Length: 464
Image 1: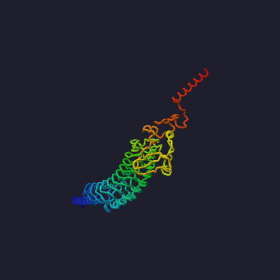
Image 2: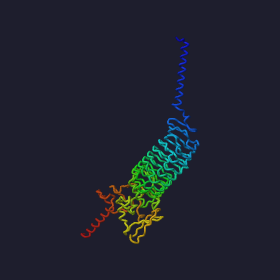
Image 3: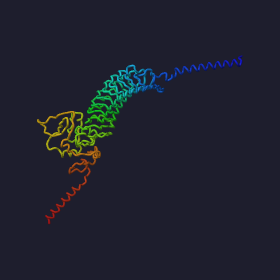
Image 4: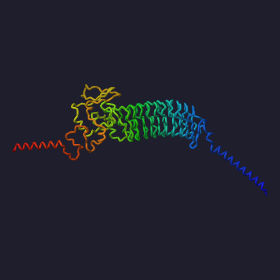
């Protein structure tokens, strides 16, 4: 039987053994189960857990630092002096990678191929990045947002966005792009927003936006766009916002806008619009569109300079030739309203002539001449302006308030107005085929009274 002293000694020994075991397990847990952030962080970087974030910004790195934990979800490398990105530069599997405001001049094809889970890549503000190799973004099939703004890019390889099926936001604004190749965006079937403003783009070809079936916003303002193919927007049926202001557009095909059935916000201001016959397709589209639009001020012809193209009326286009039935624009027949048909028949030219447009580098003038052997040739040019002929200049004008007061209502069964025209004698302000009985005008009543008075005087003279 142990004495009290022996029992107390055994108890102390057991407690020392327990404390030693607990200490050992605590050390193992700290080392293996929850490593300290400083041990896994690259030199000069700061790391944060949950989600694992590695911030190496503004540390004058000239290359991607080594030692970034593989499971880092966000890696920030902006505001450094990194010059090149090569295959093997990224030994981690991040979802967000910021590389903006560096000195990147070259990105090797396949540099990002190991970042299979990357969702956001920001390469903006790399002012020395003037070109990209095809396949630079190979393997980024989960990428959703790509930033390449203010990089002084002059061209984009045709396969740059190959297989980027998940991309939703593409920022290419404020570069030096002159031209966009056909089918450049054809794989971007989920792209929602495309930012191309602030470049030097001059033309939009037929297939430039092919494949962008889910595009919602297209920003093309502050470019040098002079020509838009009539089928350039044919895949943009879900487009709701189109910005084309501050370009060099003199005309825009009506068919191009008819392909954008869901358009809600349209900005076309700041363009030198020509408001002669070439403006008819665009004007006709505005008549049926319900869209939030900017003003479209005419630059030519001179009698219409400063007027809003949207507020011209059909009589301003009464002398324009009908579209060629063989063209896409000629697939519909133009129908004038009652007032326009009446005015045009009253002011019809005496001789049977046709209006022919003579094009030169300065002006286009409409003039009538007999068709025959000695007809003058039609000279074509791509840089043309439009001047009104005498007949077209004589057409009556309509201000914006009168236009909207009777918008799309000229043959709709409601009261018609003459809009500064000389109304015909039988014009009673009612639409054709109206069953309503017109009210007697004061002039008709006076004429009837004078006639009755003359008959009474004659009868008095005859029968005394």
